[in-house]
Image 1 (cartoon, rainbow, N blue to C red):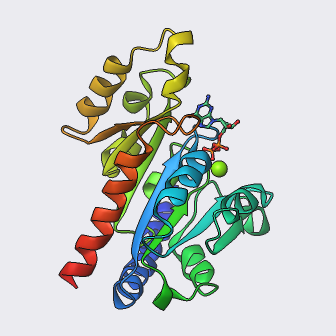
Image 2 (cartoon, helix red, strand yellow):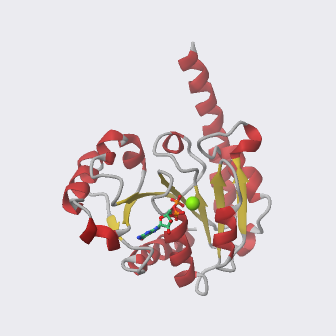
Length: 223
Ligand SMILES: Nc1nc2c(ncn2[C@@H]2O[C@H](COP(=O)(O)OP(=O)(O)O)[C@@H](O)[C@H]2O)c(=O)[nH]1
Ligand SMILES: [Mg+2]
């Protein structure tokens, strides 16, 4: 019985996600859904990436947390439009659903935006189950989380297009085996591109920011 209810929720979400995808395509907006467990560095890597690309492409962010507008305040410093969603207002959801993105997008002038980044609620499980109408998905995994998370939470790594290993500045202080982590990622998702970055030092941010710009440019070119 419960399974049927869950299926229905996901079906309704898929319909809304398809509407979002059409709406974003109509306005030529490339949408990236960024997911991870809390604290792996979604906001930090986005702050650094936005600093690099915001003068070349017009960006905006929708950020989801259960409570607070801390991340919106941090991301607004880049000078791009930011919409904060607090899921506490509708039951404390552990993910952003498609209708939530639809509502949040009403607060943005989509005609003026090339890249919309969604920082999802910190969680390696539920956000992977909800299509929001995005073009691509990225999972951030930090070196303090252990190498085996991709195999423990495989859906997240299966549905994402790229993985970003963050906090590589901490590698000298840890027993973390980065190559083992990459093997775990690619066992779940063969050939998944993996970017190795440090939001603290800026290492590797350029490469993933370039990937983002190129993906957005190819969507525009195909339109
Ligand atoms: N040493 C180090 N700390 C980082 C890095 N990226 C983020 N942090 C720290 O990790 C914590 C969580 O980062 P945040 O971006 O808020 O993670 P989020 O919850 O995924 O958005 C903060 O204290 C950051 O300063 C990094 O590359 N290196
Ligand atoms: Mg954050």
